[in-house]
Amino acid sequence: MKKVLPNHLGRLALFTKYFKPQNPIYDSNFYKRWVISGLGKEIPDLIRNRNVILIANDLFNDLNCRWNLKRSFTHIQIDRGMSQRFRNQILERCREAINRTIMPNSLSPIVLFQAGSLAPWLISRLYKDYPNAFYIDMGQALNFWFMDKAELLRAHWMQVYKPVLLSHMQSNS
Image (cartoon, rainbow, N blue to C red; front, side):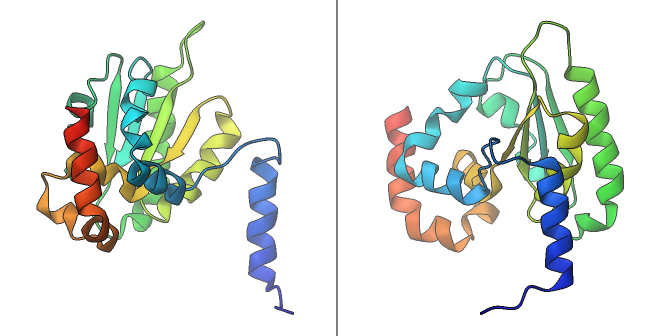
């Protein structure tokens, strides 16, 4: 039997404080599998008419154009490495962005992440204050819409699935 460490219990307690069993939680692997299957290409259509906040590095700065987003788009740019050092500042920028998008009688904002381990840290804190926002940790699945950027093609899974991903891109045209 595996021993449960005290720090794991603390993390579990924090997680269960903000997320209840009735709340579905999808990690970035879910979206990666969705993209590989070809179903992920529908994501832009599903959120096109919502306010979108993206937390990601500079490589993703034109997501609003690529997805033809119709409402407000805020890109909270994070460093490509070591963004954990600035997590509290990033959290405050996220709060400000969500506050700007919350309007009476409007749909809740979509908050997308391509932020590695920073994503669950941010989500656990944002959810407490903004439980009606919809949080999606896209992870590397977001790379699918940026296959023209060689730097993003270096990910191992992108190399393995590149032929099938390219066929999905072509069938989307």
